[in-house]
Length: 186
Image (cartoon, rainbow, N blue to C red; front, side):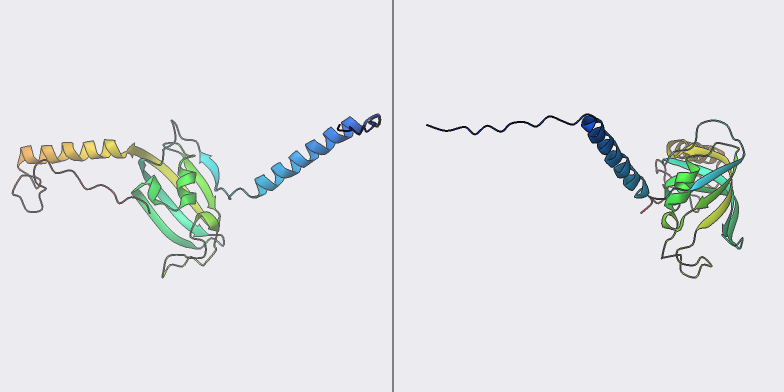
């Protein structure tokens, strides 16, 4: 026959359950704080002039004016009417573009981790681990599908007019050939 040992339960002190819940909440808040601190940095986007409409996506090609600077104000790059797929910029610039609207002007700060980090482009004036600042104007954007469609229409018009895109003309693409697609980001 098996013998059962009985243990008398001690009464719980008044207020002990409340203390347990407070401890659980404190641990949950501390865990959330640690998780928040581990999040990757994000670019900051300050709106100077509001734009309109939805922001571009990673699948779009933007047309922008920009000026890139180091935090001391030294300009390292500047361009007007620059077309480029959103996905082909450094990660911080892509993320910032996806917070902008057509016609808007913005000040953007990109932390080094989302720019070039310890490996800036060879020969560039950007030092390793440099945060970058940009003045950006988002002029317009289109999807890759819209751009390819427009390229095909232009080719057809050139062929109809017997222009540079006509079959057999120097540099002409063969009939039915697709326009070259932008190189995907690596």
